[in-house]
Length: 261
View: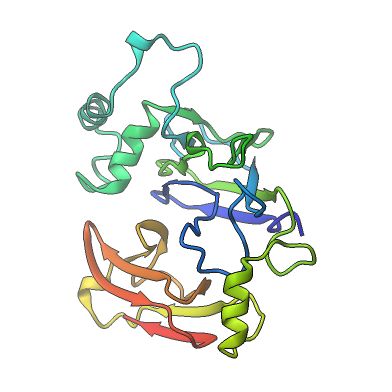
């Protein structure tokens, strides 16, 4: 009840994940579970990230904390984003694999200027998603840098400060619970299952990628597999190619949903 379970991750060449918080946002209190840890709610409190492969310096795949700077680095030695981006382009390290001005290219520049941890099979990272008063810690904003050479394997474990939704003792938004029961809604967690399929009939979708809102989720091109995700009503999933949004799906009330491009 206090963890989400161990999640194993595989990052192939160029695979990355944009900076995000592991703390779950429900500021409008739409869910029956109370995520507001500043008061009596429960949410992800800490993340343990375990590395299961070795990547050499310059091979990418680091975990970057986009609000942090390398420890013991003098302020005058800090590399600003535009300078890092220019140096990256001059190096030619990713010019043949990442498009100019793509979010992946910008991620590499961010990874080479901010606090980052390089994968090593005997290394683990522990960081906290909440401040002592229960508010979300924005300094925990982190992302997965694009893999430039090799392959990255890792596993993460999310730890909660109190029982998570669906378990005995988990905190509730009672007003939402009462409203849902009055409307005849069942007391489940509202989770939906969505399947996304690329039919390979639209050339624009050849190198498509799936995003949860603006967060990268997975490659979704002609060479990639069918994607199955757990999600919730009202969640927005975007299909993108480069910087263009080609298709948007909004999850509805059905427990099982199928989407095709």
